[in-house]
Length: 359
Image 1 (tube, rainbow, N blue to C red):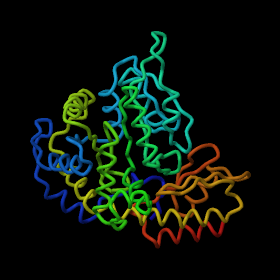
Image 2 (tube, rainbow, N blue to C red; image 1 turned 135 degrees about the vertical axis):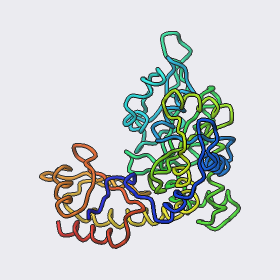
Image 3 (cartoon, one colour; image 1 turned 30 degrees about the vertical axis):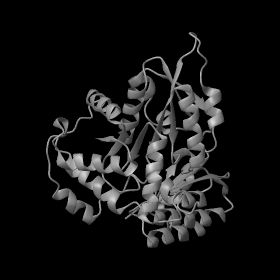
Image 4 (spheres, rainbow, N blue to C red; image 1 turned 90 degrees about the vertical axis):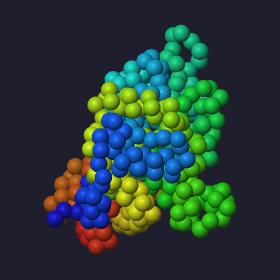
């Protein structure tokens, strides 16, 4: 059996999750009659202090629905050059929303308020209309890097001043929240609650809900659900999103079993993300000791991105590890990626480290 570090999307539902899936009450979600989906949407909206939510098959769909709802054809979307919405969603910004993109060269996938301000188009008929800013937290191509929440607040102020909307691709947002539990600024904002306590996590969720006009969260990555993402916003926005989801072919019928898995993930798999982060740190420490590793992005959450030296290539490293029973991903011509997740225990991590140490 292989040890699979290719992505946190490869997780399988746990036995307990399968049990709640099997017993989930069902209905027709297009008629808003699936009680399990309704419960999931209400739970997620409540967690973030937002008015409403909609369940979709994928994070790409929630992002694309959000972009379509926030914009008109001919508008422009501002994002980092490495953003998932630009790199990995099939040109959907142009195809689905008819928008152009203003790319910012950020720091490991993160952009600043100053960069956003400088990227807003002037009121000129020759130029597209700046309409939407999209952030990604954590940033996949940045090695799971996390935003400083104060920078997010500064970006929101720029958006408000310019009349722009702000969307969060929060596919791995819960990883960022768990990673920042030891941040003193969060503890002070929370009134000194103990890091790791549910009230502390809930305080962060509410803060994110107030900072963005819309948020997409993925249930099928580190949280371990088999399928699904949620888009959150105010009631008017989500009503529009429900229509766009239908146009995109995302209307589901008796999908309550999937929603039940998402409910279980939100209730049981958030705080355990710290274990994935710890495993990633252990593997990163082993990689740093190898001469063939030229560079390693800072490991903040569950993603490890490393650059290899010649004569090694990412393809060679991936194949070498595959032959030893470890799966990972060639991320670029010079880098590979490893992602820790729910289905990797400490024994598997230690076995992987032992293989790396012997290379």
